[in-house]
Image 1: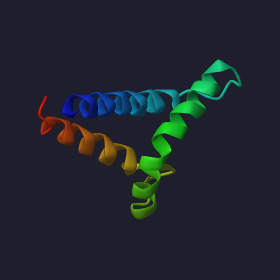
Image 2: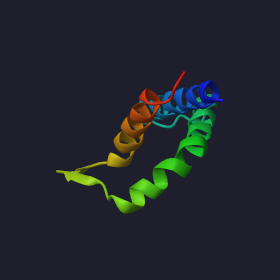
Image 3: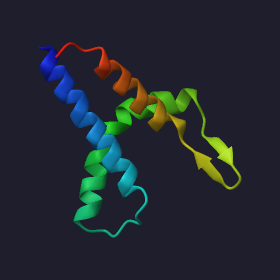
Image 4: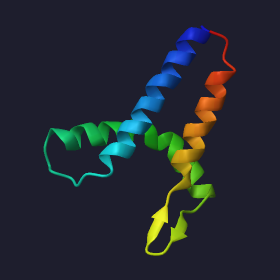
Length: 84
């Protein structure tokens, strides 16, 4: 049981990382956009509630979304305490 939860959290972390990397590249309208939409569908239900509580931090003209980092580190901490 705990092993399955651990694997699901690992896959979710990989989805978060892939979403972060793909956000650096512009939309091309091809297969990459399909992957990007799938990753958004998977990760957005977890990120959106955090984002609604914590607005982006302004760094000049750029807004830094802290919800990604909060969820990422929370999952890492949770994975550390799951017995495997």
